[in-house]
Image (tube, rainbow, N blue to C red; front, side, top):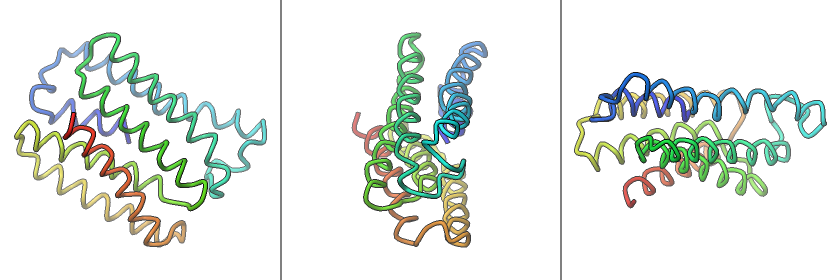
Amino acid sequence: MPLAGVFILLSYGGWLNMLPRDGKIYIYVVVGITTLILPIMMMPILMRTKIITSYLLKEQTERRIPYLIIALLYLVGAFILQKVDAPIIISLFLNGSSMIVLTVAIVNWRWKVSAHMAGIGGVTGMVLAISLRWMLNEQIIVALLFLASGLIGYARLQNDDHTPAQVYTGYLIGFCINFLLIRLI
């Protein structure tokens, strides 16, 4: 989801789509490596060390270590982008995404919530907050994100992966953290 969020920012985020091509590529590479490639590469290591038994992370106890590693990798991406003076909103989004993953990890100690819904909620909250903050007309993107959120939530329920409360809670965690973080800072 962070890579999708950065794509939306760099394509439809007002002045952000005017960044130089090389700057956008650098941002995509950093975000792609720290939020997609490295988390995927860590999964076989976690399987070999028996920290997880399945790539699907169906058991909430198996989610703890991977989520903590993912949150740390998101922070690394934000740190790298801050060091090269990338637009602060991108680092802020990655920091918010890290906070979302940590919150989901903490909640998952007691109760399983949907990380998928937290992810799409975080992107939706970020886009809505930015459109309000920068007075951008992002109605179509926000509507598409709400539609995608509904479809993802429906799929999570149809697969019997979560209860409705777990789906809604995951979404609210993601939405509220990114919306409030970007809106208030």
